[in-house]
Amino acid sequence: MGIFQMPSLGADMEDGTLVEWMVKPGDEVHRGDIVAVVETQKGAIEIEIFQDGVVHSLDAELGAKLPVGAPLATILAAGEAPSSAQAAPMPATVPEVETPEPEKAPVSTAVADSELPRPAMLGIAASPAARQRAAERGVDLAALAGSGPAGAVVLSDVVSAIPPSAEPARPAKAADAMTEMRKAIAAAMQRSKREIPHFQLSQNVDIQTASDWLAARNAAVPPAERILLGTLFMKAAARAAAQVKEMNGHYGEGGFTPAAQVNLGVAVALRGGGLIAPAIPEADKLSLPALMAAMKDLVARARAMRLRSSEMTSGTLTVSALGEKGADAMAGIIFPPQVALLAIGAPKVRPWVVDGAIVPRLLVTLTLSADHRVSDGRQANKFLAEIDTLLQSPEAL
Image (cartoon, rainbow, N blue to C red; front, side, top):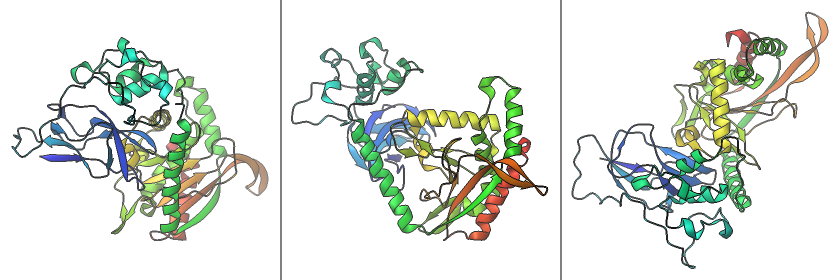
């Protein structure tokens, strides 16, 4: 028997609100399956399970705000019989939602009263998260075929009914949600600056060769198969991290633990403000087209708040890029418990010396923020030099 607990989805997370179950008692689950949706200060996160078994009971109520480590469900191993001491399973069906009494607060404070489900929708079995998204996007729950317990409409049913091209509508109280996200960011960055002895190194890198190679490569393929310059930066950073172990890992109570693989965190600016840094697993081993596809998928889901818990917690090194237009350089703050962050300035054409002559070249400034408890200038310099070397042979990436 195993107890599935509220996971920690970041160094600053203390609790989360359970907004949706994706499973019911009796369901068979496997490692990596999404079993619940939890709402945190950073948005709604899909929670994965990391064991195989059968759901015996759901031990937490929808809408409950639970601390990290609180029991969510009881999972039995294959063939394991439940003991009499185990809690009885919660009902497999989703009860109809009655009109809330005035003294009871709604499950989510992110939706204005005017956006609560219409009376005609209240008799429809649906999860709170599904009702909220349907209200935000004007989706008629009665027109949906529910895939949840006893045919209840769940969040994924509502998301599937929304056209992919539709621009997500912001809730009336999105400002409140953004305030909570800013608080979460402030707490994490304050802790980082307080506890991590940062030091920074910057290096200008000539990327003219990489830019020319990329332009020729993209001209020979359909638009859907083209890749961005940022993909080259990400791949070079991931491969450099695999070589310089001091930049890739976590620092905890027992000191530094190098990571066995490079899970590259990608800093994503959210619409309306805020920042989140989900990770791409084993980014150093992906081909450039595969990495480009993974980045596009990650950014789209991050902005739609449909990230998985593993993507929020598995990062071993983060890269933050300013894009093609912007400031020359940026010094970033490390995401704990990681030990390094690479910031990439906007590429600019500048005078550069090549074979004794001053010529215009496309340059970019890389700024590495590193944890002085783990590394010093020698390792940081080696990391930046390795990225420089890799970018001079883009065809080998």
